[in-house]
Image 1 (cartoon, rainbow, N blue to C red):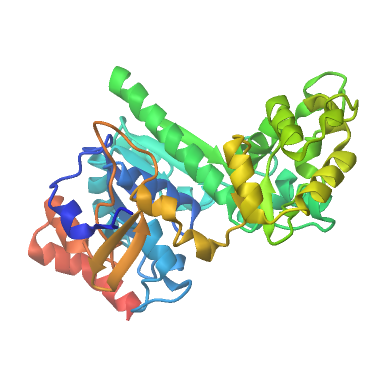
Image 2 (image 1 turned 120 degrees about the vertical axis):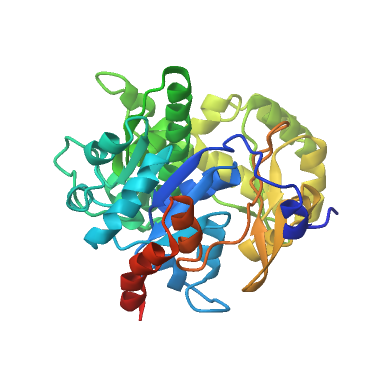
Length: 411
């Protein structure tokens, strides 16, 4: 298996050469949605400056850490970024923000609209400083709607979008997906929107404002699969893809362990029928086509359950892999940490940092000419403040004067 790639070898490559090398991002986000978006941009070579208040990002305190304020979640979400502490409530700090904005390609924040206006970090205020800026606001609900301005977190959006209710159809009780899926879908949406806006600016020189509303983004994400018959007027059915919300959709029990197998299309079905030596099922009207199987899910899943109980999971895996029927053993997140395939493809990097050795996932997307990489460890609170202020042209005495109020508030 391929060994984990060390940070030292990465640093020896010199400056970032990813597809976003040369792009500067000013990141005023916190928690998960915004930081995951800017982590993706940093991994692709952007110079991401994480601007924090003196109290720091909430995720600094979530979970175990070697030293205070450097939790594992924070380390992963903010790797490769530079950190600066600026208290935007301090009038003297305004000149720092304005100088940063003047040299920034992308500005991203997750403040509620009223708070952004109060801090004068709304689009109109910043575009007056830098008309070419790409301004990305992450909000709970879209501009112009009656919910705009309401506070929102992942759980709220999972409930409002219908996702938590879909879980009830599938399991019998309403519930949240065991991952902050709403936050991360919006992170990905913001990342592609920012890159599209950068492409437009490259061709035209025009900056612009981007709104990424969580509610609308997640509803769109869900309806990609669940709109079904409701795409028609009048509707031909309710908005739900029956197979996915079926309570019968679950891992199958074998003679030994649970197993995930998806006998989905007609080719898979014919090969499965051959494996179990049941040619009669090919002409059974309940199962003969994908549409028929979708309409007879109870009988279909009962048949699969009964057959899989006849052999151990390892034997089924070998048979299904040989037949090219999608199959996977049930793994826990703990199992994934030692997955052999992930080691084969160099999924992990090890970083030697002030917090000791860290193990972090590499960017999963591969580029043949401009590969992304982890640019370095996450910053301690305000770690690069002096460095960044020096780049902006502030002298030593000015920097000390600007940093003093923030130090006092931390103390």
